[in-house]
Length: 452
Image (cartoon, rainbow, N blue to C red; front, side):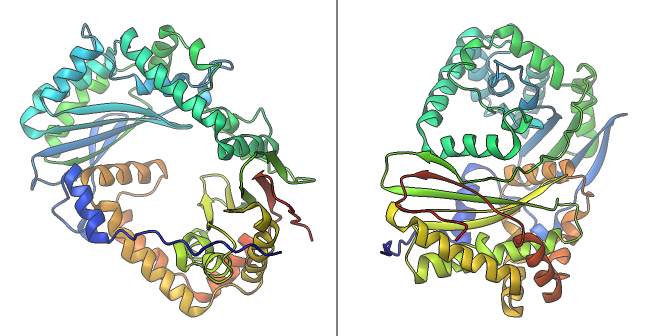
C-alpha cells in the first residue's frame, strides 16, 4: 500500500534577503564577485598569505589554516583537537577566559578556533581602529594560550551536551554504524570528531597544550585575509606572530578508503514513525577531468533542490518522501555519490523503488541538453553567493588554497562549468551512477528491498 506524504513547502529565502542577512553580521565586499582579486603576499620564507584587499569598509578578516586535526586524537581521547581549538580563546597569557574574552568584546574583536579532520582553523576579525590591540592579542592567543580551567570546563560541558544529543539522534546512530561497516572501524575517518561521553571527560589540560604545540606551527599554515589592510601591513603584522610559532610536523597522507560491499543494508532499529534511508557508492576524486561535469549532473539528479529529478519524481509527483536529495562529493583522493530521504515507515520500500528507478535511468540515459544548460546557468549564476560578506570570502580563499587551486581560480571558475558539454554530462552520469550502492536505514520500515 503506497503511503502518500503531503507536498510540504518551505519558505524560500531570496538572494537579496540572504545578502541582507549576511550584511547585518559583517560587511559586504565593495566589489562584485567577478572582480575578486587575490594577491599572494610573502609573509616569511615558508608562508604566503592570500589577500583580497578592500578599503571600502574599516574591517579586517583573517583565517589561518593549520594542517592537522582530529585524526591525531589519541585512542580513548577522541575529541581532544576539537576541545583544544574550541577552547583556544579561553584565556591568553596571564589573562583568564573572562578577562581575555571581555577585552576582545570591548574592542569588537573576535578570534576563535575550530578543528576539522585534516585541517584546523583560527578565525580573526577586527575593526581597523583596533588593529594594534587585536594583533597583539592574536599573537598572545596563538603563542601562549591559557586554556583557563574554568573556561575549558564550560567548553567541555558544551561538548558533552553535544555528545549526549548525538548519542540519541537516529541519524547519528546510522552514520556511525554505516561508515564503520563501509570503511572499517579502525579507519581514521571513522573516529568520533567531537568525542563521546567517555572520551571527553578523559581529556586533560596537558592534552590541550600538546595539541596546540603539535598543530599550530609556522611551517604548516596557510593564511587568507580580506579587507582594510595592505600587503605590506599584513606582512608586518603577521610575520612576527609566525616567527614565534614552533616547527610542526604535518600528518602523513592517508590512503583512500576502501568501500566494502554490504551483504545486507545496515539497519538501525529505532522506534519512530519515519524511516531515514541513506545510500552511497564510490566515485572519482575532484582531481578527475570530469569533476565539473560531475557537479553539473549531481545538481540535475538530486542536489538542485525541489527542481531536481529525484525531488520532482519521488516527492512532488508521487508524494512518497518528506525530502530527498543526492550529492557528489569529490575529495582530493577519492569521491562518492549518495542519496538520502526520510519517509513514513510504510512508504520506505515504495520510495526506494521510485528513487532507484530515477537513479538507474539517469545512469543509463543521462541528462537532457536543456537540463545541462539550466544547471550550468544556476551553478555559474549562484557563484556570487560565495562572496556575500568578508567571512564568506575568507572561507572561500582558504578553501581554494587547501584544494591546491591557483589564486586566479575565481577568474576562470565559471568557465570550467560552461565548458561542460551534453556529451560530457551523459558520460559522467554513467560513470557516477552505475556503481554498486551500499544501503543504510534507521527506523522501522514495514518493508525494504533494495535488490528486488
